[in-house]
Length: 94
Image 1 (tube, rainbow, N blue to C red):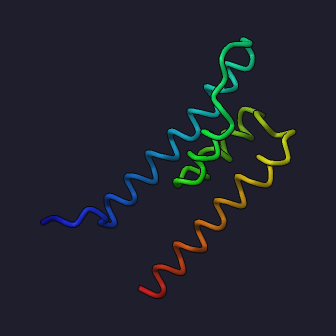
Image 2: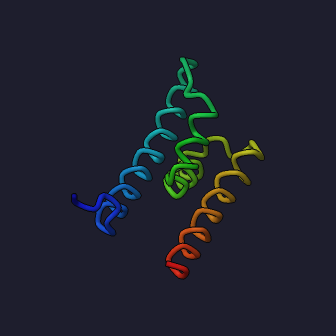
Image 3: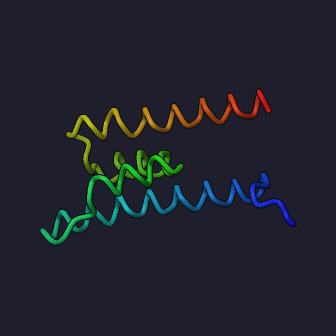
């Protein structure tokens, strides 16, 4: 059986989820401008927590979206840094 968690697959996943995170911040900003249905904040945090932190954080600042909400300004980078530290720890102890 072929290994699923290869370096190549992990890199493809991280690039993909960060593109999705960036796009979802843009989409939510567009919806906010139009006053239409919004993407739940919980969903934005889930995307961040499953590896999309660089994309969501970048999108937050590029689109100036959610930058006045402390939960996002602190939460997105905190989750991202924690994931990077855990990833490095995993690689070192592997």
